Length: 407
Image (cartoon, rainbow, N blue to C red; front, side):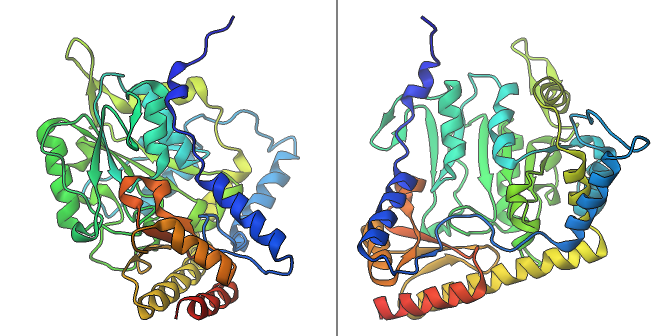
């Protein structure tokens, strides 16, 4: 008989979204005429920017001509997109990022999981709590944790995010090898100041740790004082890998395009203590296990940086941010304490002792779907996440219902 990866059996059953779906189904069955409004998931609703559609259409036409046809592309991404990203996203950082340090992929979630391929199994790991579940589950899958006990996996270091620290945890007192950070944060919507990120970079450099920095929502930052990239901090290029995505910015959730930055200065060590380039290892990993993102998709991503594409992307982000601001204002006027909603598409609402109680009330009395915070870790209990990813008129309608239900 074939043997399975026993570490998968340690995964606690992720009933959150299954349970949500069942409750929504029951609600719809009990009230067939209910117009349920979804403010729970993090999927975009606005269509692709026209500039991206035109670029993809033109690229697809190229693929139909013998003289312009392309087969397998470079696994690390086409040079035209890597160069564009370096010029537009990283030219003003403290560490100038070169195109060959940028790797195009089909999703940030995939890269965050796959990056563990090049990191040794004996590394210790710290994750924030509340947490994007992928950070935890992928480490469980590769065998870096023990069993789950009282809602937390043995062997992981959990960094508590609370209203008191603004959901920006402090570095742990003990050294760890790998740290996951996400700002603007999913699920809490919190952002980190330049000083807070510098504190983390100092910690990583002093302890020889690696920061895996998830910046998938950086385009939602409007406050000029808040860093968009970890590489705006002195020395971060020696201790941090950054992940970004076109999904929530240019609406590519169905198109699949993202990128990971692995600076040449970022090193790991062998068992013998010799330094080794993480960039070289990641390039080898991608060349072996990944066939690259489709040429038309990469041309569409490139178009998001054009003058017209940038304007269209900004319009979509502004629309979601307007939704988020309205959600936060409504909930605060109802007496709820909130985080996010200003430089983030998520609003993290303090719900009381029981996340599910407020979730059920909003579903049953307002036909509005949110996300209970318990799905994001122990520190998520007592909160719900409300997503701004919907059409403005739908959000306005949902908030009218929420106000009626909670006022």
